[in-house]
Amino acid sequence: MLTNLADCIPTMARARKAATLLTKPEIEEILEPLHQCEKRLREGVATEDQVIILASNMRIALAIEDQGIIRGLRHHLQPALDALETVHARANATGCWVPTALWFHELDAVRVGLEMFGHQLRYLSARELHQAVRKVITRIQSQGLATVHAQPKDVGLQAAGAAA
Image (cartoon, rainbow, N blue to C red):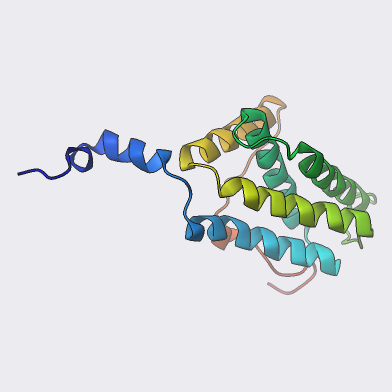
C-alpha cells in the first residue's frame, strides 16, 4: 500500500521540493563562492569575473526585494551594487582590467550586501530564488547583453594575475 501519494507523483514531489525553504547546505553552496570573491576584492586582487559575480548576485538580491518576499533591504543592497559597479568601472578605466584597491565605504557596502543576501536566502524557497534569477537573466538579455551560467566549481577563485 502507498504510504505517501505525493512521493509517487513526480509533479507533486517537484512542487513540494520547490516550495520548501533552502537548506543550510544549499545556502552555504551559494554563499561560499561569493565570500571567496569578496575576499579577493578586499585583498585588491579580484578578477573581473569575480566582481561581475558579486554584482550579479546583488542584482538577484534586489530582484528578491522586488518580489516582496523579504522587504526592507534595498537600502543595503543598492549601495553594494553601486560600489561594485564603481569598482568595475575604475578597474576597467584603461580598457584593460587592472585590479584596484577599494575605499572603506565600498568594502563595507559589499560586506553588508552579502550579509543581507544571506539573510534573504534563509527565508526563500528554491522556486522563489529561481524566479528572481530568471528575472535578472531576462532583464540582462533584454538589454542585449550576454549571460553565462556558471556553477560554483567553475568560478575561478584565484587572484588576478595568478597562474592558472
